[in-house]
Image (tube, rainbow, N blue to C red; front, side, top):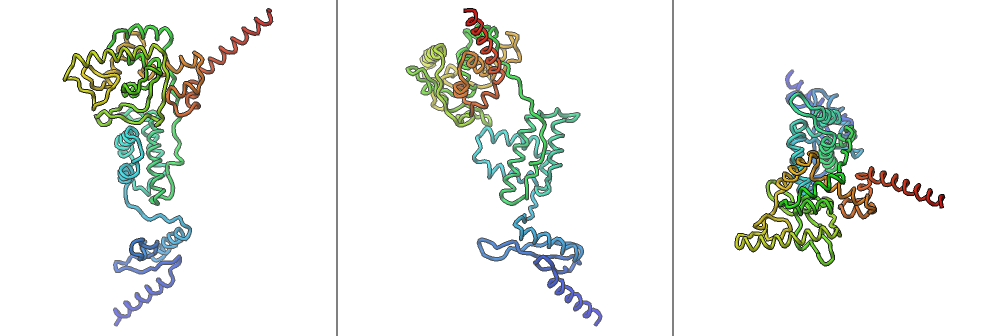
Length: 404
């Protein structure tokens, strides 16, 4: 009788708990002694049935508190369903399902950053538990480095942050997290790299050094057009109009996962440039040279994937980026300017154009920059010097007028 009495009392307590649960939902004491509260989060769009979830606790008070919090969030439209996946798992899903609009090179860099840096440090953290201090500590650690690793640059930290922020923004958009925990992170200041174009005497020495070199025309075209290396190596003869003296730039040749392929330009903005006569004459010589190679090779001539590239090896194949770069570095080392990068040829062209009197808009369009503001930001020191030179010329003019 005593046992039956206790069972009836427990059932009565359970019914009372259900009636008295605050914040909606229902509560019950489970057989194992813990308490459970169930609540409705909506309806299944397929079946129309209610979707119910549960919260658990050791006491009725604890569960009531959890239930009240959940139902308040539902009423206020800020409820986020519990997601058990780790941040690393979400990154895999994000890369697979939400990055289809990225360019291959951009996607490749994201994958590298995730696998090399982000996953090893944050991959095992629960997605919904990932907070600002944890992310900030990660940035600080990889920036400082350890006894075994060299610290990453501020620019690399900025790139890592870009990936983390985009992944969390998508998670927030689909309701996996309430807010983007990386928003409040503080990034190290990115120090702008000093642009080091070739000086006039270095440019003259470089032109003499490349005379007769197998890649002479590539280096000359780069120096006097400002094309990127991938843009030059991706040029095909249909891009060259000798009658109009123009070069049409609309794609680039890049190596992705060991395979060369044509890709869109960096900002998807095709452009037509009108280079100096020297450049066009060099391209005519290159066409003649290539015709001689074709005749000599005969059946061995194999254009890369059927494309008539402007710059090829002696049997029509594409040139490797690293090979062209390696030869360039040997030339500049011999000229005692070992720090000169291949990209500095592009900077040299830009500076020379501005100093020759080209307006910023023209230089921007020739270089393929997205905006003139970016060009000004890149080469602002040159325009400042030009302003001073302009002031000196004006002062000379004033003095001449006064003398007269």
